[in-house]
Image (cartoon, chains in turn purple, yellow):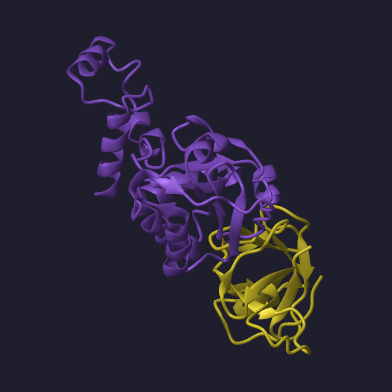
Length: 205
Length: 126
């Protein structure tokens, strides 16, 4: 259900992201290309580009990050469908919740779902990005299918895990709009605790 | 690295042996929570494959690791707080044929050599 909403958001964006479809022209093109370019599963990979957030809703105002909050280490990664992303592109527009997770970790799945639920309360005013290790990329596709969060999941290098001191999943990191680390929770964070922090960040006039 | 393991009863020529695989990561956790090895021991986690070879190289057991649980890294210390330095301990029960010695192999890291004397066998991941 959640994924369907997220796809809708992607379509609303009118962007050139992978996987958008549904328009008659796109369907026709797909048929013409006889499966070559449009076929395959990349347009329906859980945790892929179609799960990126839509535009920030009008009128949203964010609380300013403390001036002494450390800068979040920027990184590039690929989503589960191979789409290249930059974390700074995500936090440039809105606060971002990173969830360092693993396919084999039940606690991580619970923590990831809690974070996604808390973020969903704010529609597209906030974003959540799951992070899996490179050696976990294949299994993470099943993890994403099972969880069906409608949120993007990135495969990140060991460097990213070390930069965020994520020694063992789950680790949740809250980053402000503009890229300041506001808080990290080793071992995950209860949904209500994260929700409270997110409520403090987002103001709607 | 080894020690221990008195064997329990045997059936079909194999003896059920308890192994405690200790990850000396000293990660901060709540005692008792489910865990996996913290970096650089991230290859020790639920579902990770292992094999046990006899000293002649024959594979005598294989499987996947169950989830670990956090134990106080310094049992003599009452830290007075909930989250404390811990080791992640994975407990295995495996049937082993009688051999002079064994090696447990994980995806990464050096093989862990042991003999079965007292129970449980305690192996420290290196």
